[in-house]
Length: 343
Image 1 (spheres, one colour):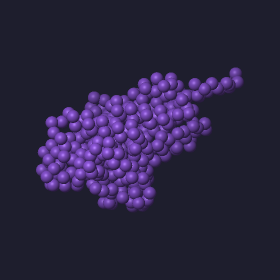
Image 2 (cartoon, rainbow, N blue to C red):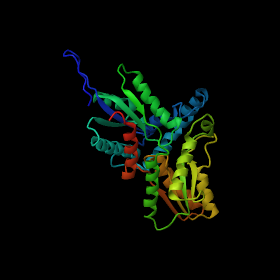
Image 3 (cartoon, one colour):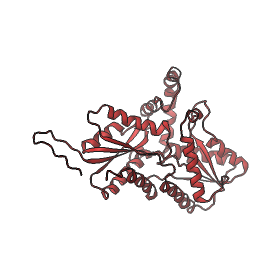
Image 4 (cartoon, helix red, strand yellow):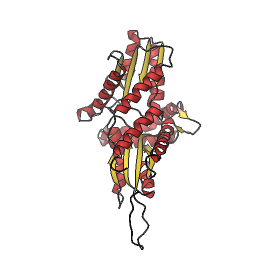
């Protein structure tokens, strides 16, 4: 730790330590109507997520969506809820990632502290930063757990970090970890997860569908690099595994509203593959660092049913890296690289 020599009559100051803040998308506090409504309102009020004019969007959000969607999404969350801890698995996994990262970094330096937070819901970003500073962290690395950069994910998380600092008299020195869509450790971990999962099956998939979270096409046309990052991840993973573009395909899921989103759509692709005569299908979701509603309920649940309803026979979902050893290797690799010069 760096020593700070203070006059004898100086107020106590904690300083000289390093903070790492892991940030994920968010989670409701419960599956009930009001918990879901609070979460959806915060999420869908974000101008980074919904860029539609407020004059158009506010009536739609408050008079239609928030009247009906909380019940539906609450039922969806209930199907994949961690009942033992009474929380979403996204929260459970993100906490585990932070705890394992903290244990690893203690072997690097005892002066590194780790916190975790959610952009939407709890635990929130500002209190996490305040806890780091209370421990003497005058340098903080903010690390969004989104492999591919998007304004609606990485940028809005960073916005919240900056907002927290705007209210501080003594701001910490801040570093923002870059996206890791083409990080060799990430590609290697994804490839190993595919190999390990396929080794547990009694069938060999004819197609592995690489499904990324979608976004409106208009965001791409305005300059968002997300589509390019996804395509690069897909290409590098496909090359690492030695698959052709027919054996490992790319698609985009979770579209919302009437606008055109990035294509091809996952659900339509799954349906088309079943109708085409593909009998054995696997899906992997490299845009997610942790399994969540979009992977466990939408991919492993809804898309399984779509495939089977249209002629498919064998289906498997390949889990996210989560807090597995390969997944933690990705996180520790990026964090240690970005802390260079501080440790």
